[in-house]
Length: 97
Image 1 (cartoon, rainbow, N blue to C red):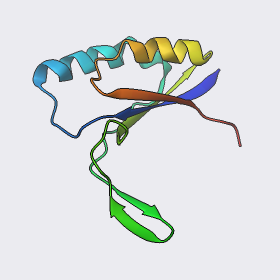
Image 2 (image 1 turned 180 degrees about the vertical axis):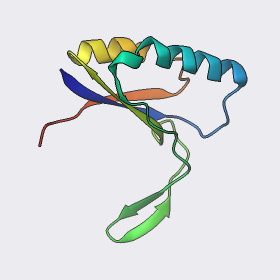
Image 3 (image 1 turned 90 degrees about the vertical axis):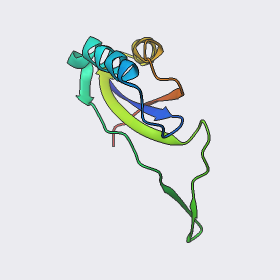
Image 4 (image 1 turned 45 degrees about the horizontal axis):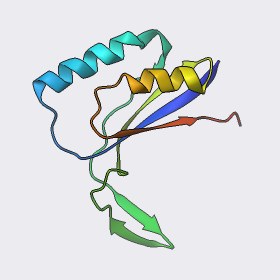
């Protein structure tokens, strides 16, 4: 089994009740594969070369995460594709250290 992180990207708008219900149904559909259901992120800052700057609102700004354990990337992608998330989801395999 391999671990994958779903990194949710998009905007920081508060989801509607309908979207929240869809999210909860989606999470239940793979709860047996979930290691860490994660949390949403608040707006953040970037640090580069010792200087900080405010993150610009784009589709690529991380807004939360979930960690799952599945057989391979294909299984992780199939789960991610069923998400009601309206932004994009980056699916990253974690590497053993």
